[in-house]
Amino acid sequence: MTIGVQSIDSSRAKITSVLLRDHAGQLAVSGRLQKRHHERSPIPGHLHIEAIAVDGEVLAEALSTYRRLSPTIGTSEFSPRLAVPPARVKRVRVTHDSPDREGSGAAAGAKSSISLGRAAASSPV
Image (tube, rainbow, N blue to C red; front, side, top):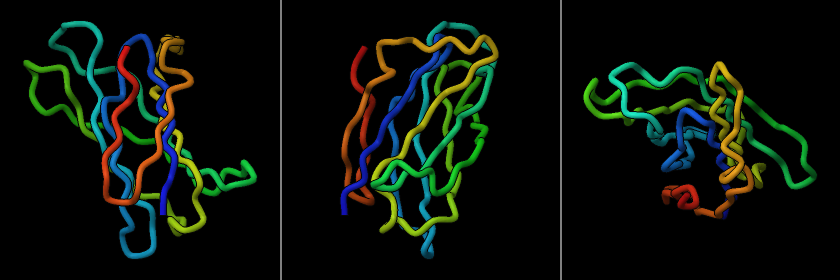
């Protein structure tokens, strides 16, 4: 089964990878995001993750935080689960919402398709 992935970056962070897995009948979404500016502070904001059906209906959604891998590098990881069977999902949209709510525009239409268990990276900027 192939599920499309759409990542929408912000002016503060870029979603660099998304991995989808079936976890006991739920869709497990994990991945990484990279800070755009070189500061030691955490990436502000959160992720909005949506599982979308073939007809465009949002089947499940979650707001997710993320954890820094190290204070010296700008990479963070996320790993929420959505209470929806992966077989019903056609596309997953992962959006970084920062306090300033500015999208980068460059990645707003970034899409890729992946099979469960395989990672997809956002389009290069």
